[in-house]
Length: 330
Length: 287
Image 1 (spheres, each protein chain N blue to C red):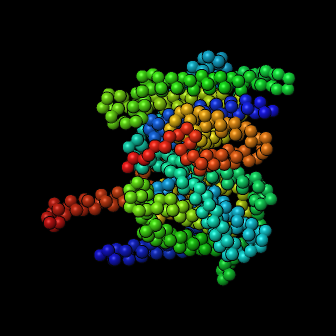
Image 2 (tube, rainbow over the protein chains, first blue to last red; image 1 turned 30 degrees about the vertical axis):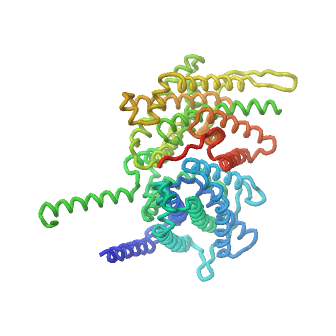
Image 3 (cartoon, each protein chain N blue to C red; image 1 turned 180 degrees about the vertical axis):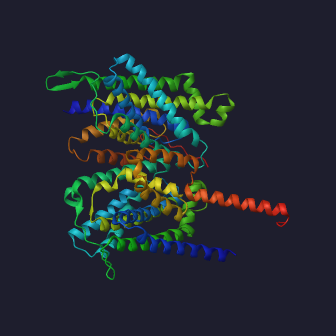
């Protein structure tokens, strides 16, 4: 029964992914919208890193936009200034960001709870300041432009649709990796830290090490997203990686439900595409958005995934009650 | 130069301290990090701008009207952002809800007062000068008013009965309720005092800067001050904020573009060397 359920679940995910992949470029006629969907996919990859830290580990972090920026700028520097191949640049920037995240993580993860959140806020501001002002390396306020198009040896991206296909493959792979992490011993250690740190220590979980590892994983995902963003936009500036962006990432992850990969996906897509649907609201959009965030937290704190789960549980309970009432259940 | 920087540093630090105290009061009372605090500060600047420039009220009536408005904003804020979520299973939800509130407040200010920065009237102009050194009165005024307010908060929370009630409500809500303390009233009062403090901070700092939506980002310095000083500790928050103000103002001696980076670097260094803050005590966690 359980195996069957699992297979069914995997099948459902595969079908949805396939449908999404095949239908979206056909349904969206203009390049502009595809660009937005592409951005949403990149944000999804970055937020997967956040979901490892926040959803599994319970650590509120604002550093995601910062590490995303590190990845993007490394890629830009490798490609434009050193002339590396795009594939090499992506790999190089992910490795480099992981190394930086290791150092930052070793420092930041000594902090607990709210202190960690503060530390990550400070970190994202420092990184933004450096990106904005270190002219010889990051190009200052103009950023770096002239990043070549993504070229994956056997598949080179020329149109936005090409990017879309690459991004969705990467996004699905990353989603699978995170799903795997969730059921691994690392995921369980993180969950135990989230639920009760002292109990986790008593169970022999090395809290510090686990947090650092999750910070590095978050850094890796966000840096991958940053590199791909650099290739898609062909120019990057520090303005893409602000504290506000990190706050938006947090909201995106909470909208869908931080504990489920599919929830994160839905939340990201919704929040990235929504501004386009809400063009009628024009300048009222941000106001409505802010009110929406508050209402969301009040009425469904665990996001859409949480809502689905409660409804599912309710239906199940009702079914059971019905069965008992008719005497079948006994 | 050095003395002028000292003066501006301390006065900025005092403004951060006003914000930091408001933040700490809310953290102590309900355990929530208020990310909309900077926007409440900004709203304070806008409201006083409205009262002084647009309506032309003199100082004393302006202060009275301003305080009433601040308290009202605080009440509204508490009942819309915090109260519906007080029993939430996950504390992160309240944090996110205050993030949403910060956006709402920013947009409201943009609708009411327009997107362009406004120039506020100086509260007090002129300067003292000794030879080469000039000390502007407005900095001295900021320091004076802030010191007074800090003193008031101290007396209120450490010496008076009402402060004890608030502390009791913060320490154990259930036990306090059993003792007959009206929780809603105390929490509402805390929010009102907190918004009044940051609103006055906004009023004081409006002449130094332009009144714009970006004033909200000042709260980050107050956050930094709180952490440097030691979390959950009003004295620490005040000292930490003044330190942050001084670091910020003296960093302009050797860098102009990296000022924010220097401030936050100091924050991270303090966090690494003394995670509990300068004045914080290391309290062991309860299981």
